[in-house]
Image (cartoon, rainbow, N blue to C red; front, side, top):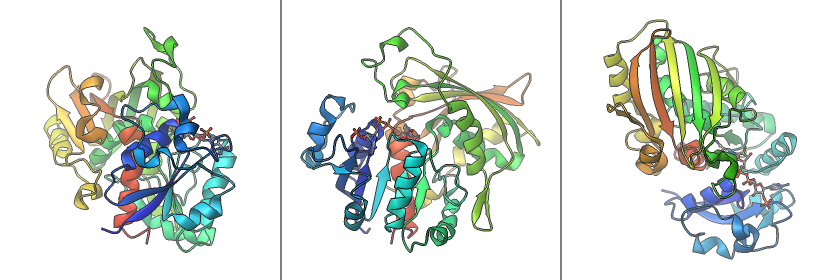
Length: 359
Ligand SMILES: NC(=O)c1ccc[n+]([C@@H]2O[C@H](COP(=O)([O-])OP(=O)(O)OC[C@H]3O[C@@H](n4cnc5c(N)ncnc54)[C@H](OP(=O)(O)O)[C@@H]3O)[C@@H](O)[C@H]2O)c1
């Protein structure tokens, strides 16, 4: 497979650090550039991160002494040295939109973890197992941006990364209504137990903007391409409540769902068990062998036990049973900073490379 030089924009942050560790030994991607805010620019990666390093493994030795570039001022320099960039920055929405478009317009594709462009109709939001075909909107986006190579592709919010993969394969039954309660880890807020002592022995019933994202973003993933844009699906009708719980990593969701044509429990289990997508077909380096794992035990999946399944890239499901108000209810889990953030973005980049969008 071809080798690609890549940059990490926002390398000093929580998601950026995760990119650094995931890309350290990647078989296709070589990290050539690290960039962040003017506060970090000019320092080595080690100096710029200081005591903010939050990964369980050491900072990659190959990156420690790399000099951080200025993400906004050095666009031209960065774009000329890499094949594409990963981007996860904490900036205002308009600034992020401009930054990402600047890279794309300099013919440098952007694989983004930011939410700014998730609503832009010609920017795909790809879960490689579910809607890989949405990449076909990229030529239309390039036309709008006036680019030959440059484009933006985004990763969805981490909250929906457990239940959308469980619901999507059941589309043939017409998913009518889904009620979702999420139990989300503190790393999703960029926190650890050390930096967030208020969460110990506590549950916080509000995560700003999360419920809207959990309800709306799935509709883009369930959508289809028409006239060069992604048209959001009008179903399923999703209502969500998102809670922050005292867990380091791993977002769990309790789901209630009703269908137009109610499948049997056996049909659902068979579909989940057999489900695979383009990521498995292409045998992408970070693709889990089995995307959806169903656990028969009543007390599974558990956050601590299953979040790291298949390198944190698989989704765990359990407790599928009939409900008195909806057709079924079940519980599902995914690792929020791996599959739900940087890992999902790396897999999306692998898909886009394998499909020829980075050539
Ligand atoms: N599902 C997902 O995909 C997912 C999950 C979690 C987070 N996110 C998103 O990822 C992004 C980063 O989250 P995080 O938790 O990693 O945040 P974080 O830990 O606060 O890191 C923010 C990063 O942005 C950089 N930055 C801040 N201001 C900048 C500027 N003016 N110019 C250039 N870079 C700047 C910071 O650089 P300095 O260190 O130099 O300040 C740092 O590298 C956010 O948009 C967040 O919403 C997505």
